[in-house]
Image (tube, rainbow, N blue to C red; front, side, top):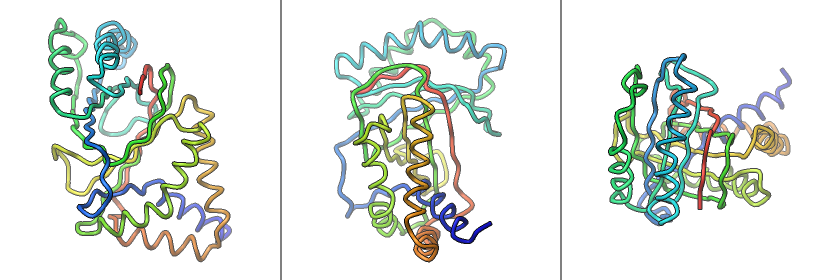
Length: 258
């Protein structure tokens, strides 16, 4: 492989994995919390699960979005499966945990779902949003990408400076030109995983827009020299755990945000 291409691709991988770590010195966003539920549903019941969520859960989310309880929601289906077994999931987001509890209380009033009882795995996350950029939108068949990276202890400020310089401008540009519907940076509020995990989440309206995202990211790397890309990659590697990066890719069956 041509060395210049190699270093471009290497730098691209780190930049897309490059979330910002919240620190006391970093500029803070207004309070925002994200509740995520992941499910492993048996294959014969995939279509029934999606239909059940559309019939029962979506009206609750729509009502809560309309009255201001939540800021956005989505329901998704895994595209690239991994050993976790997650096949489907949902999220909703609010400015306080009391609002999240209000949604959970309404969902808890629904009749028992036999498909949920048949799930082989279920996991929830309660995340804190440290950066949120969202355009008012709603629709079906969106595309969701989650890039998860583990930042080394005590490296949050260095990570923030690198991310602001090399990664954030790309996301801001693609929000401005309509390629992205949203992007966020998340950390765990309730810690259920190893320390240091951070998540960059972004969504597009269709697969073409997701292609445009990665093309734009690659083009940025190609404008730099191999030496510059190598230096950027090494700088990110110095503040992360290189073997602890994961991606998740899903189709968003329904979403709405404001």
